[in-house]
Length: 583
Image (tube, rainbow, N blue to C red; front, side, top):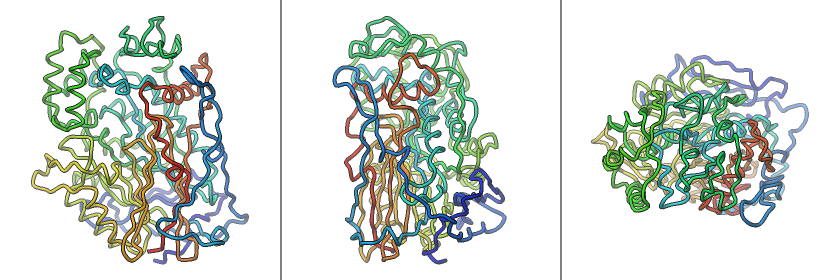
């Protein structure tokens, strides 16, 4: 198959919601997102026959026009006050930076370029059940950023991000239709079934009540009267109010109120992260006591700074990957726990249940069926797959989580070989690889309990495999909650870009539009453009509507005590043109 044909110039008159779903194939006017025929029983998406290759599309009647509306090129939320709790407003946009570490830019390329693919990356949504007994809010006694005061608003914040994606008229640089959205892991925060249901409804559309336990009211640290947490409804002079946080009567009732998500209006795919795979993103499955605690009627809300520090150190050092010491800590503090309403919906979910939930017709939205996952994944016990993005572009979603425990990642030998084989079998297509972990955070090679004899491989080994295939153009990931773009040069022009995008839980709460174009001069360009949610930059404390809560989600995250200020990255990590030689 030629790698020079455009697939982005589709006929614009077709409704993007029109879909054809058959044998795990999905075609939409904005592009295609259908599964490749599996090359291996552990590949993701089986079909009765080869999925059809998308036809090259005729050029539209009118030229596609670039635009900046709704992107960070036009405006970025910025503080409009200088001290205390800082209110946000409209700030200057971020300009686009050309990065030429892998190829030199050639004049006139803007007039020659052809769009190959355009898509949206969402990552680290961390949809949270903030009343869940397993949460570690009490670590705030040793680390003020271990609990975020805006966490109860993760659902309205994520819905507002979906609304922003839906409002995009196309790709900001080329104007080409968007093919799909990919969420690169940590879709949930605590491996809880409540969170998984809310995430799937955010993405596919539906009514969501982000509440668990007592259906009548909130039960958690934010109405506990504990001064180290922001108690928004109370007159209590807690630590955050002393820093300037407001008192917002009715906040908690609004935070657990029913919401509506329109769902994405383009196909979306899902990649698994460590918080999706394991309780708290770091403890392997298997402890029945912890599973019972997750759905039970007791919740620990405070812990001494010394004990909190010990627990946090154990998590960072991965010295307790199965959560044995964590279980013993909770047992030792049974008398210190507070009573909450038990809820079976808070149970941890297994990898198989994660896939089954994606396959549930209730969460299909505009597709594709399974959002990348399939019954072949269930049979093989895998969570990686391939899909075709466009005529000349394939996508590869990896599972970089380590079921043995710890929040850093790796992949097993079977998956590494599958990756190499998939790239080899699709050498005539540009390849975009998706994962949760970055190359630098894949240093956890603890054995997978389900495959104890299989070797685990780190990020350098994955880089080596990708570097052997000249058609790899990008590795797109998250996990580090920071915008970071890294060139990976290789011999004989075998180079690609690693694109890491900030989370939607920590400020600046961004997603990224990625466009792949052929410059018709021996080079490709990857354009990256960051977007915020659709919520207004300015907030009104009296506005506790769904939109008002989304705006508060951003502003409170900006003011969160201890929050890092470097997560937006440098100019070269934000809105960019990334050049590389054609492989």
